[in-house]
Length: 275
Image (cartoon, rainbow, N blue to C red):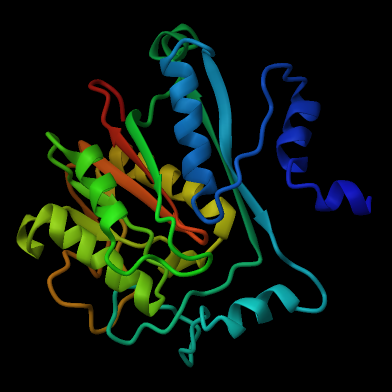
């Protein structure tokens, strides 16, 4: 099983095999943005009439006996150095991300007509998807954030955004650039959507994180709730709730920024009568 265990396409292939799905089966590889890109490309296939329903998501399993992969991230200076292991995204104390050995999330994306035909519970609607590349560095985010700022401006333009599920890894430079982009697009904290980092609670699941972020955002819309942040001494001028709260969420963004300069964003919205 050495070869199947190391094939990047194996998770998608196993889903196809186990459920007898004969449509297009493909693996999107965009580092930590993979799950967001997969959901976005599935959205486009449905929107453009190629499919009625797509299973889309992200999966990662980096558990191995030698610990070499974790050590690789450590040598890059990407891992948290906090005494208790909590990464504290968007904190002045942040020092890196909490490495997760693995995770998985699958989303059922379908046209509205298809969902109605099977009386499906609709958590949220994908309204738009954008992606771009920094084209700058293989492991570092581009420090001006120009591409991210442009992407966020394009996808949020004309919409009131109530919630942002941020990339929020807890690394020093990433959080700084992401905070800059948020402030540039939305203004000061009082004008910003509520912002939270799921990675600050469950760790960074890398290729699975975008899909998990999309699921959390859909659940936030369905339940009109936003989870809090495990963040001490938050960075200035960010709308970061410390505790979870109930609040109306009609439009929300989930974003991912991956090694290699892969950037992706999904805009989700509430479907009236659902949630």
